[in-house]
Amino acid sequence: MNEVSKKNNSGIIPSYKYHFVLVPEEMDNDYWRLVEKGAKDAAKKHHVLLEYKGPKQSNIDEHLKELKIAGASRVDGILTQGYNDQQFSPVIDSLENKGIPVITVDTDAPSSNRRAYIGSDNYYSGFIAGKALLEDTKGKVNVAIITGSFQASHQQLRVQGFKDAIRREKRVKIIAIEESKITRIRAAEKANKILTEHPETNAFFGTSALDGIGIAQTVVHLNRQNSMYIIAFDTIEDTINDMKKGIINATVMQEPYEMGYHSVEMMVTIEEGKRVPEINYTDTRVIHRSDLPIATIEQQKRSPS
Image 1 (cartoon, helix red, strand yellow):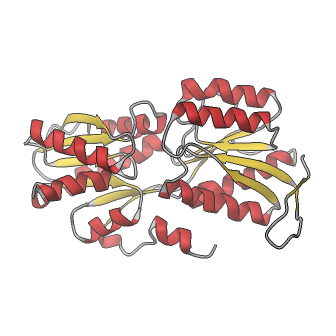
Image 2 (cartoon, rainbow, N blue to C red):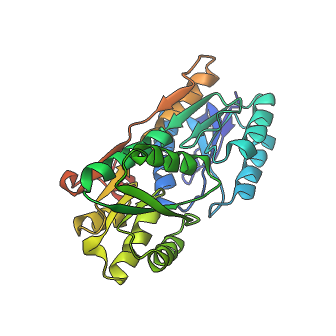
């Protein structure tokens, strides 16, 4: 345990029991900001100094670099997205070998020696999205998938779960899978590409938070909203607004605040020498327009804990 002191604006030097670092996929991201909020609320409760450090935009090399920097700083614990099991596991194992426990958040690195994973069951998340599409549609469905990253394991699992959910339904066909690089602009561009090359497309599944609104933007621009089914991911404000307008039909809702909060609490438990469950799934469900209103990610960030 590192006893940490840091002067605040009032000049008072508080004492912290532990020093943790949360390394997200990208810092300036509504979803990860809510993970951060949960983590910081738990850190305050347990007298933990929590740093939030990572790439500004999704970048595996920068992400791994931040993990190594945190390890060199000899922090008490690291919370991070596993992102890609093959690339992240050796770095996580190196941190664990130095005596720095690691908890993966949102995306697991199951081949590593990380102490625990907390987050959605990403395969299940994709599976229930596929089931929602089957329940919400009738007749022939030509569905395109836009995924945040071909490399990210959580995105891969969501795509696979979706595929498996619709596999035996002959009326549903996947006609294209494109990558958005987790940007709204790229998602819109890829949706336009798909609709140009496959005008028979009448459904989309976006597997990351910005995909759905990028898809919706293109669908509206092409005046296809009345003949298109869109299922998105996460509850950022623009997604909810598009649901209210009837452009996005459904979205998969996760619990990023809970992931952040409980990851810190688990790390404190580990520091106290106690065991924690290896796999900790947070709730995931599909919501429709009829389920509104709900608190958007932006509203949850502003609300008191």
